[in-house]
Length: 513
Image (cartoon, rainbow, N blue to C red):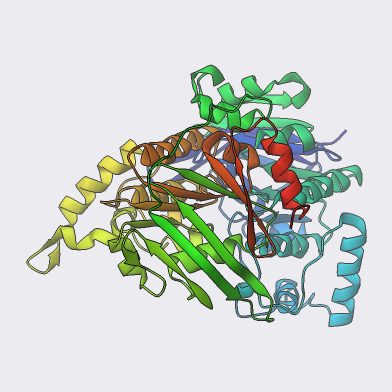
């Protein structure tokens, strides 16, 4: 069979950084080919080469047997190649329908009736649908991700590239997307799926290419790899060398650790928080939650049940309709973000690209945004001292970049997340950490580091609230877990309880609401 996509001895550099070196890859029509690797291993660069987003430096590419060298994404689209990018490209002030119409281009733009027909076909074939009349900036991140996928499927591509497509999806949406990948492959088309989640690889993939440091560390049918093999190829060390907490989050059969006793008085108090959506429905419906110093509380739940809105209220992005939020003796209900930072509240937002960093600013500036005054000398910023401090953080957190002066926009999504996590954990004092999807889009090695740092923050006395769609991760990390359901928090469930997973699953579908 002629391969759908074939890369031979491909190389690409960005300045002094070698992103890909001698990479070869073969994707057959009718298969889901997974691309694995640590953040910065070259996965997104490889996808962007195929999509025409970056130019080929060395090597050759063929598409269904024909020489292929796109110079821009429109060339790729014309050849039947579509890509779902890691970061959203929707215009937030336009409706979902307007974004889909805009994406079609002036010559191909369908009328609304034709758009609805195409969407009906996609929903029937792949089970994907989105609220067309909602503003893109007002819908949950999971809905935005589905809109990005639908935008590509409307073109009926013969090769679909998906760069970390499930990073923002809840469990049900992940299942639907993986089923979509299988249906596309079964229709005779090719799918390249970039993911860091080993469970998704084994459920959806047929073959894999593992990148490490811009080169191919391993490749072949997935039937020939075990989970331990994939982890070792990705990070360069055996799975047994990783933190047991990470192993428990990867292996659902791993035994939960013993329950810890938290006896201190709560320092985090949310009482009766409410928040209404634009349509009048309640996103938060009387949320009550207390967290003690040293305690890690997790929030589980299907996307869209108020988790995102809870973070926006706690961060000060929007005020609650009613209720209060106290941190120690500080009433932060209507405090400014600066005031919350001064009180010791660290926030890791779920959308790191748009809410967690300033892409046009340097890594150093992003790392010390709340503390730039510490580097002021006679009214001017001492960039030498700033970059020296940033270089230490970059090394400590394993951030892959050309240096402290590199723009955030040049980093991979996972390395952007490392910067955001490092900044929030560096608050002094760190009284409370609110982490929304803290390991989203991270590779196994980076997840290992982030989970360990969150645990260390709790051991140092911080109250920690973790919102995550990764239930295994929450069970491994947290002391107790509450479940977001229709704007309320149900539970809690002790994470070390023998039937914790089953009880949380019951609460997620509203069985006890």
